Image 1 (cartoon, rainbow, N blue to C red):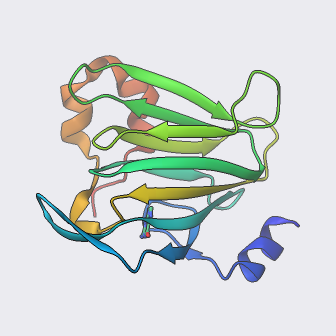
Image 2 (cartoon, rainbow, N blue to C red):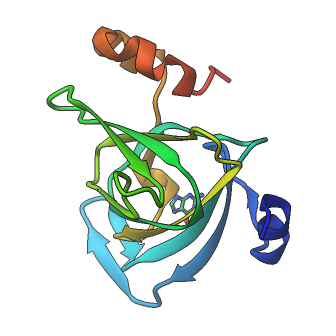
Length: 161
Ligand code: GUN
């Protein structure tokens, strides 16, 4: 399926991070967290396309498991807020690429299509389930805290509203 067919078939909407998404599962079960009640798990389809090739830098308190379903390669940049370590992981079907990525809660994450990719369809499981109260976008203050990563991250930080 090409990217336009995927958007129609999966009924995707634009995501505030960039790209396209659709919630595909919300657990009926709730759990209490230090920040309030959440679904036990939620899951989305997330799609990057040539028109929407970036998922901008953000973090979530929940752990997020990522599964490449099609397309790629897609590069993930992961910044550990405590250590300042920046990690690069590529999801794709080449031997040196991964089909799965685990991102622990609290780690900053951005994604972008690379190489000849015209799309990447990644499914995510979020545990505890997704809630915007757990989500934060990076801004220029984060770049100021990590000047050693400014060149790598500046294009992935959402412009001020
Ligand atoms: N990122 C991961 N899961 C979700 C979700 O359910 N909704 C939104 N808006 N973003 C997400």
